[in-house]
Image (cartoon, rainbow, N blue to C red; front, side):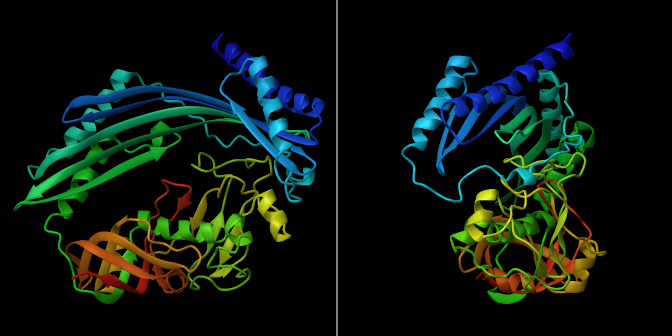
Length: 445
């Protein structure tokens, strides 16, 4: 009965999307697209052995966009009854009458739409009761609080969610998929000789069976926090810098922003006109694979129904393509790359060295494990961010470092990557190992 009920529910949602498209056509729209997103889940936070928050969350939204004479109107509703949906379509059509004409506005080209929708195994429900979630969170935090130097805690959190996404347009495309995402995290505070430090760890996956255990997450959170004790400034200098895998991801996120269509057609990118030019060192190859089964950013189609395809974005340091939606592609006189809504599993090809081996090869320099602030200029590439991490001498960590800034220009930083680790971190849509930059300005005391 549950399967039949779910099937009927999905059928009704598909019918609602089609209703929007039909209604938009009846009202004179030359093109229309509609989407439905429904999410439900559970999140729990526990601190010092007690439950702080326990939330069940449910959200839903229907959005419709219409195009009339290259004018765009958009409206949305959380009420899925037909009168409300009909009113949302009417509102979108009315809005379109007052927007500016834009020759680049419109649906994705029909020949770009996905025709095959493979099962990417994105849906792995976690039948987790509130009591079980609380038990996991407390177990995680208790493990993190075992060392005597751990004096306080910001808590542990468990989150599980499942969502339904449906998209259709008046070119005849209709696609849908279910997806899940689960996570467990913990943050604790250590104290020694009057100084206090905090650090954290987390695990996330579409499949709960692939999460690290509560004890693992708690233990790693504690270890990372204890390592930070005794942190101090270092002298201002130019030195090699290793960005730990999770921090290397942030460098690549700036690259993605710079090669995204909206930045390019607005001429607000430090990589403007760099297609087929060298933007990284020879060591860097970046590939996009939207079809990884269970991937955190996997999808058979983008937010416009365009088919996603595996591709190489950077080969041996040379930029091979941009990150484009249909609109930004038209603004640039190019074709969409199936990236309306963002990148799909961008992967930095790993090297063969562990993080310890990277430090050994660096000999002397800084290992960055946390970044603070947003000091990045997307137009010039100037980069300056607060950082924390560890000072390395003779290839080994000597002490923790705090209250410093790492700075440079991203165009130069990308070219100065001299080694890539094997310690791949796949907890995001950007999958990257640690990277070694052979020289950056570090501002300290």
